[in-house]
Length: 545
Image (cartoon, rainbow, N blue to C red; front, side):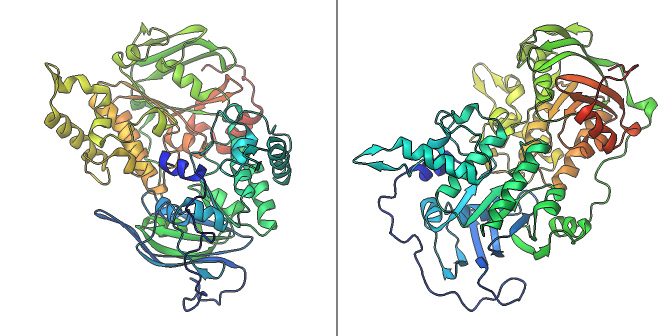
């Protein structure tokens, strides 16, 4: 969510019409997307919705039908139009054409306040909470109860407590600063804000992306409680197993158009869903592994018993040239902190890191980059990209000095080098002058990885490389990672998805509660055995990590 959108959510309602629905004609004429008569339980129906930006038709006649009390899953590749559709429904964008029928009336949602007043609330993937404010203040932000010009804080805290109880989380302290809460609690606070506005439709964009498995189960419980109360949910996820578990019906977008509507979430074969999202059937997502003798080259990285108190302890590992090593573990097991410490973004309390046999200076990112290390962090938007800058500048960020001379930037050379990388990565669109923030998640991730292709990187650290990336772009990223390994680059990657770790890696390390508890060839492990180790593993006798 942009800063402008966030500010719009907390402004007063001055200047708004009392009724946010600018057009109250009775709905009629259009049939629901599955050609069944629209009953009273249909709260939202879209027909022929179009949204065009300069040079891009983001939505091209989209159809959608959502019923009260259901979880309607919205699927599609990055760039399929899901984000644009969300912003149309939340009042951020106004469609160029088409009908939006909300609770039986044709409506025009002029802005985010109008959507919220109508009962449509959106929880974005990147939560729009204010870390320095309390839980109660975040829940009631922009609609604080007041009298005679003074906020009634006691009433606000009581109301927040009642909402959290309704969500099944009375243990969340209403006076706590939101910035100090774990990710799962922040999700609940965002849902509480929606309920404080009497939402009838809750749009959830990748809500499980930052949650551990037990937190996802709790999220699903809360969603089921809300739908039992008649609240409709539009649920967006790239994880098809979640769609099976929580969804009732599915609509698929492809290239801004509706590829399929009202599919049964539990019975529709995965092959059909993938085919409708991509226009092709992806049978073999992971590239083949090379034979074992050709897989390992010389040792590139040696991590020798490094420790960061409270995060991980006594970790040792080795990465060889041309080898992909994956780390499996729960969120909070210390995986990301380990990668950041190896890269120099965090300073260890004990131990050492050696690159090509030479010790790296602790806590020094520049030294790590000079030694040939590169990193794609978990939060690409906040940690890796300059969203307002063009694609070419983001690609050349780590090698910028080679394009400067006598205090001036040689922009033509910079653009040409970035364009060559973009072509090799099959970046879409390939316009390197375009702001990187306008790209889909999968293409943004390609930019982050591609940045290191311009340098002399010998070891690449990847933290959740396919988070928020659709199935088609994932396959392309997997191919890219394997090509880098084939060229002799060592890869150390972290992923919350066990099948991804097993399918992409040559060797797997299992991490639990800050310690490495097991290591083995990926071919010797399966998903069940890794999950057993992740949940209750212990260091096995003879393991050498």
